[in-house]
Amino acid sequence: MRRLFPILVIFTGVLLSYAMSIALLPVVHIGGITLIGAPTEQTMGSVQRIFYYHVPSAWTAFILFFINLGASVYYLIKRCATADIVALVTAEVGVVFCTVVLVTGPIWARPVWGIWWTWDMRLTSTLVLWLIYVSYLFLRKFSSSGQTPLLAAALAVLGALCVPFVYFSIWFFRTQHPQPVMGGGGSIDPRMLHVLLVNWLAFSCFAFLVCWSRFRLEKVQREVDEAHAMRSLLDDPSAAARSMR
Amino acid sequence: MSSNPYLFAAYAATWVIHIIYLATIRRRYARLKREIEELKK
Image (cartoon, rainbow over all chains, first blue to last red; front, side, top):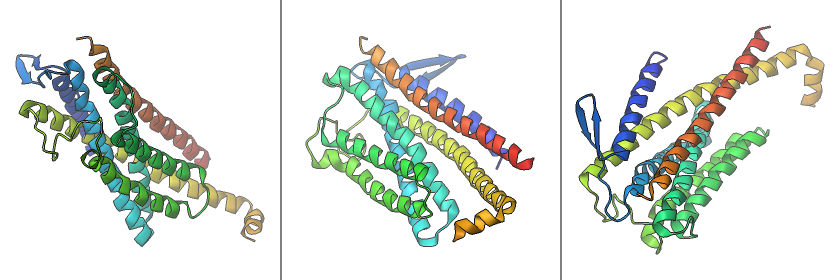
């Protein structure tokens, strides 16, 4: 598995570069090869290209939150430490991608809607979702109780319930936000769809690599914490006995 | 074309957010390495 990691890093780097170039330019020439990128949207112009980062980031965040849900439910049933680590890691990386969505959205809204932010259902529910997972991470970081993973898992279930609400909010409520490009009755140019899916694949690979790296870090960190606890127990058994009383 | 600064800002912000997060992971790796060295002593 360790040999696979650098190969995946190179693959993801190349894929991200390719995805970014076809997202930014309608036609890309590299060393005699011509790549077809996304055409410029007629109404919004080049600012619409934010779409190729905004939407894949949102999809990646949603997938990570669903993995977090699965891992949290598994932890609640089996009390498996590995599932707890997976839940923590996917929540953390999911929050990063959700932050990208909340930052790129207003940057796109300003030239198109004339405002940075509006309290409509899609935007507000996305912000609430982000706040739930940020509070999840704060709970994990600042609570020293032995019940923390259990409480966090319960909070994660609540957070994941918000994901479908965020996605379907533009179906059920009148919002400023546009309708979904897939599954919402809208249509999209096949070249735009291709660029969107390539960017999603690139971001998914990137998220997987970051999660992998963060998982290894968390696993070793827990082993080191256990070793520290064992060492302090061996160094001063009377203090440990006092704390047990 | 007047929208280009927004496009640049959005792409730049995306990578700044990811790079900041990767930097925190790197810092945590460095701290963990120091802890392991201390444990070995």
